[in-house]
Amino acid sequence: MKSILSLIRWPNLVIIAISMIFLMLFVIDPALGINGFSDGMTNLQFILLLVATLLIAIGGYIINDIFDINTDSINKAGKNVVGRSITIKQAYTYYWITTAGGIVAGTLLSYLINQINFGLIFLFSAGLLWFYSQKYQCQPLIGNIVISILSSISIGLVWLFEFYALSSNASVFVNAQTNFPLVNRLVLIYMGYAFMVSFLREMVKDIEDYQGDNRFGCITFTVKFGISASKIVAIFLGYTSLFASAMIQYYFYHAGIVFLFSAFFIIDIIFVIIIYKLHKAVTKSQYSKLALLIKTLMLCGIISMILFYFEF
Image 1 (cartoon, rainbow, N blue to C red):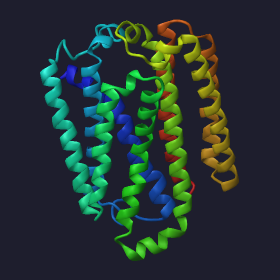
Image 2: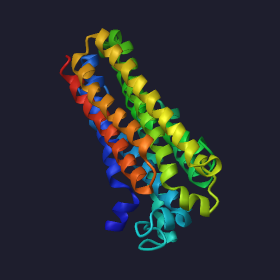
Image 3: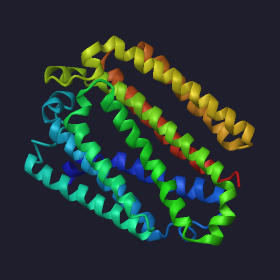
């Protein structure tokens, strides 16, 4: 059981699930002035969305560990489970079960909201995770961008499916549509935030995993251009993210969203600490701690969603 929990990256799954739940309960529904899980997506539909997203994410983690079995023997020495406590054959079985389950759940959800073509989103995401693990992650920046996009998509899916679920309830849809621009902006803010933080973390992880990637010919940005160049990119992303955070605060201030405006000062401070530590980082241990600190940024962004609820 411990090996399986490690394989599926359960802390990451918790973060994904909480971000989707919080966005629905504390941002979208309050902004639209609707009742959660009744006016829009039902309990069953939202659960299907969660299950589809999480199962496809699990499949992505598993297939990534299968293709990374060599590099992980160095980058995660003693912590890699595929090839040790879980055989490659078992890992492939888990991959196909979770990925197929995710696609089926997503397709069923799409059918229930009368948008069966949306099932292709889950098929596309699963395929992208396969190609990422097999090819893209060992191409400079492409793999980093792919993972960052997929991280932001999980947030956007909540609003996409809620919007089309609302469209089947004409009276609620008409009453709520005046607030659609606000929800669009908020969802884009959190999607952008997820993208930038994920991109920053991916660059730091590339530096952290340089030794194993270099030994087994995985040509990441760090392997091709060196640690110094990757560090410059990571620092640039840190400053860019800090600037974006300030712009978000500017929007919150002028929109009268006081609680979120105040909360983002904490996020600003964490960005400053990360930038400072990036300038000083030299060892693998220091980059590992930075990766954990960046994950704290993700949690801060998720927690900030709760504050929006009190604006209404």
